Image 1 (cartoon, rainbow, N blue to C red):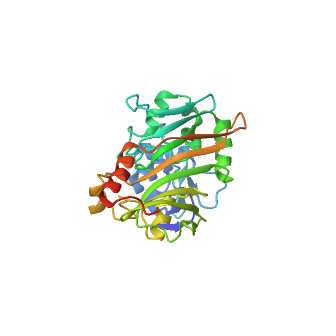
Image 2: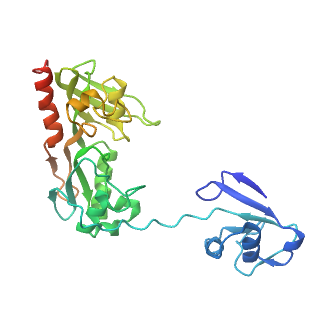
Image 3: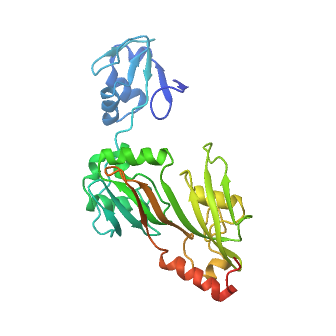
Length: 313
């Protein structure tokens, strides 16, 4: 048996098997079961998806077709089936900032993942969204069940969700064209080199740009206002680590929970999506939604004043 990379389905491999004398006249389903030890379910999937071919043939093998000694059997990887839609969970409470026929805007709490994944099968924000707005299921996986953008698990703040295909496509076009204005607030260690400036540089091979404004500094920490022009994964957290002022309590790009965050009683990274401005997909008007700092970040910043005095900026 041999394998050639770069062909076929998701694994990128095609398996090749040279039929032996004992395979003479054998049916394809029997050879798959006997030689590859495949279950009947997998054999059925291979044949239904037309993933078994006799080398040189123009048509795939079907159930009942026979093979002969010396013939080369090619097996292409089966295509994964569609993921099941997210399960509705009415126990997840949503903080709705706005809703209309085209979209809904949520104030996402820290500590809640946005969509299902490992260890978060039914407790994601999306599970709560499809319970409250069942039409999101109709948008399907290709349109993220309405999720136009994402926030990290421990990032709080404004999140917009599309309720129709047309709204999703229009909103995604706005994000892609960088017409959506995003404003974040962050508590960080240290301070950036300039009171106002731009951090840029590729993230995972894609351009990324963040405008940064230093608002105040209290002792060893600062309060920043951030305006990401692009939307790369972990962009703000990565960019701030580049200028040696990582987000407080960031376990991946900063120092995590340390002495400073312990004094501030912080339990999660100090990043909040304060506002979002975009073109409404149906009215065409520019609209803005805002949400104030959540209590844990507001209290941490107030405690910094008690610990280290008045701001220096």
